[in-house]
Length: 473
Image (cartoon, one colour):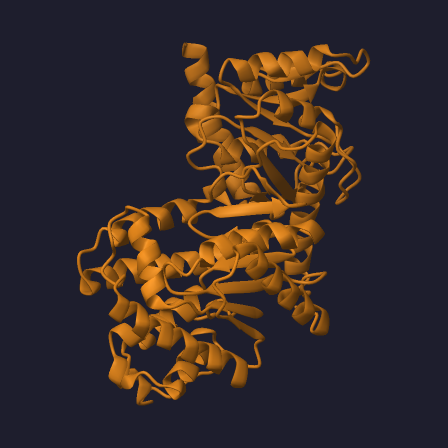
């Protein structure tokens, strides 16, 4: 126990301060590691400093039960170095000169005991700044322990701070990029490929940011599905996600974030912002009046918009489907609170302002009618997400109320025929502005036919619009 405490003190008060001062470490995505009891870290490997950076990001409590997979045949050449590494990191030693199934079995034994593993799927340090092909072992481990998330981590700068054949680190800035946890799905080979490609995308993003170059490739296409409560927009959103995922990856932002590929939902762990959003959403649903519903609903919409950005940032899907557009919902909802000031002109100004397409003078009359806009502009200075394509389900409010009643759940303050009728009017006005003033393709569906038919109609419309306009970033 004393030996363990001393090792922890060395990490906390010696190694971490040195790493912080020497490498000015920047960490992105720390929230993806927070709250995980068990995990497997999979990272690229260019330098012996990589291990120090990975131990830098884990909690003090995790240090004793986290083991890095290391090459025994390399470190055993240097007896003193071997003893130091063995003491500080308690590695899982792999003898590459005598490969076999034993290394994988040893990893599985540690994971079964509730410990964590740090693994470099490339197998050894690659060429500086390059990522080599991943070995299949990481996929096998993920397959064996499906309940343990795999964290993809990209390390940048260590290959310059301590390159191969060098023993003296240079004081150069390094960064750690922690991706969202991955859950096993498919086969070991496909999971390994997915992990490798994800880390490669993080690497490319980091390079683009440092060279101030625009992102490579085409950005995610954003499709919003709108409709009053009970219209069936959630069912349509899920169907569209499955349909469009047959030709690429799709991320759905609904009551929870879901990832689809080849028509099937993929296993992902909720991001922190999603967990917070769901908590606020549950609170909003318990509101007894429109007045008490307003603030938690506004916070939920802002977090949902933030989650859209997180989905694009981490997963880079081909399409993002929004079950309700936070920006457009917010504008449409204002009709319930200030119906007298609600007009097509006010909608257009609000949409342009909140999406950062237009700046308004401080004395613009719209701020007198909707003072919240001034605060929202400050909260999201870079603008909220504006859809590339908009689908609107225009269903009779009376029919929607019947559907809501049939659920057997508590009715929310706005779920009455009168209020849903006003919201329907507000949403249709928003659709007019989107199409006529912003040139966004809009499909308004009034049919109450079979949902599969409606989904196929919307899918064809989206595909046609995206083919006509590539919408490159």
